[in-house]
Image (cartoon, rainbow, N blue to C red; front, side, top):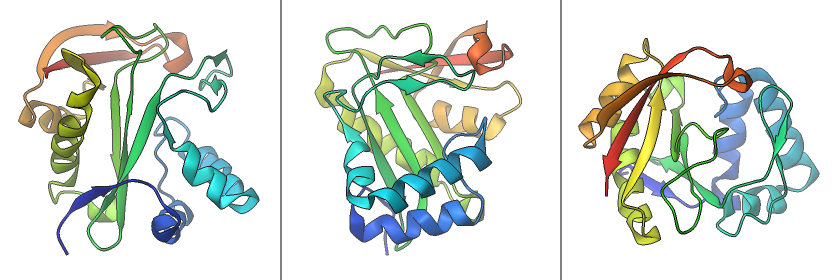
Length: 186
């Protein structure tokens, strides 16, 4: 089966849950906690969980950052990577009418491939497919970040036209470490 991005749906949910149970989570800062939180939300109401992953109106309420601070939700959506089974997820968030992001948002796009599906080009393909979809939102460019030691992620961004624009310090909410910011013109 070919690789594709799919809108999260109940049909794909068993694969997502299986990946969480195997130890994968989209949040790389607190993966174990994130996996447990998502599994609990799925147990509570799987339909509501799946629906909140596509939130272009930012109606899902506030967001808790890794340091516990609470901030307003941005419009955004998630897509799941699929090759006949769940491979990972990617997400896009933005502020309507501007390319700017609030200081607590590191970039427009994030992605994570399950460990057992890495080194197949899925992150590169997923980012390329996502860029096609987000061009309809009127942004001139998107920003993505990667840690200096995360060379695979940097290669994904560069393969999709990314250009390094700065080295910066992440906010304390994200550990305060150095990061790289890339720009992809749309």
